[in-house]
Image 1 (cartoon, protein in one colour):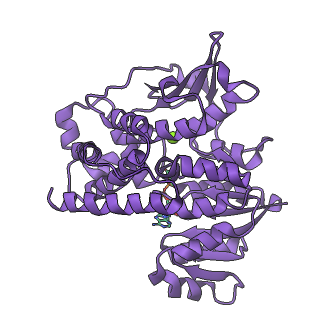
Image 2 (cartoon, rainbow, N blue to C red):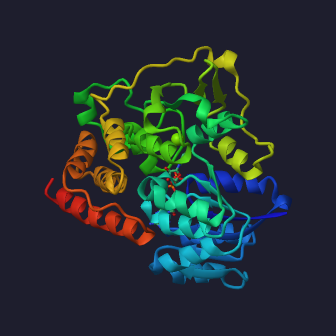
Image 3 (tube, rainbow, N blue to C red):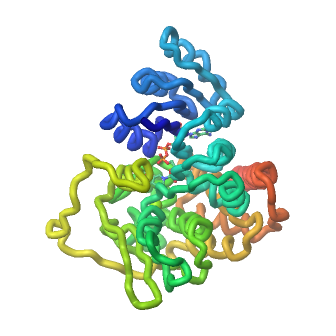
Length: 383
Ligand code: NAD
Ligand code: MG
């Protein structure tokens, strides 16, 4: 039996993870579950999985969590410190499934355990970059990528030498607006943006997929996970989301990982790593899919990938600024404050301003994040 904690248990990644655990209850002991709010939902999961500890980030939700857990024997806690304590509770594997830079400190606390961290929370790695990879090395932790593209690349690199890689190609669905022109994009609504054609995901990543910032964040994520250099990382649009990414080697061989658009596949590969486990996912029916197509990304309509590449090239605090500005802009778009095309425009403006000094500790990364949010929020108010 192995032990597991899930940060962001009430989200899309959390639900997919718990679905796999539920089907294999005898294999897992669930240590801690966390959520932002949603006390009743979290308490129900905590009871079902007989966890040790349930934590809500929002302190106002603690009374409701306590009440819902009364008599269950599950400990209840709240606040940012408690989130980190949950992540630091000994567990063989931690799923980092919080959305946004809010997941950075808990993810770092999990890394400091020196165990396995299955990382879905790409914003944390984008913001902290070298600070996180240094912590992984220092504490002897294993970072397994949950993100489907990075999980695919991770699988395609097995048994190979990274020095032999010619290209790593991240595939992108292109999102719900793949074929829209600029005028249509300017009028896109939040309801349209969160409706992804292939994947069922949280609101923030769905908007990121629509702007293609998701692929930009993933470019930076790949840069930190796979040491081949930015110039060897490419993006290709692949509307069917069947090929999850590819690695081309110097002899001309390209290895790809294919699968259904179901996050339970990459999550299962992390849970069972280095072995395999069963999933209930539909097998890949290529005859039914018929055709796989590919096209070059259009950075005129979707400038986010270019902005992300610029931030990665600049390094230092730039990726944390990119991420924080994007989080604020996406929230403003979802709240109806700014137009869809303004998301990338605002991020570009934030990147064009003075970038703070390169952060070298977790606190410094969090300070860059907080400062950028404050300045970006100010900009949204004047939008
Ligand atoms: P989601 O919105 O469905 O869930 C987010 C989870 O984080 C919830 O449990 C929520 O309660 C918690 N949370 C939100 N804000 C928080 C805060 N301030 N403090 C603490 N907890 C907070 O999001 P999701 O789609 O599950 O995505 C989670 C992460 O996984 C994101 O970084 C996303 O980019 C990444 N990811 C998701 C998918 C997917 O298919 N959903 C695929 C690849 C990567
Ligand atoms: Mg992805």
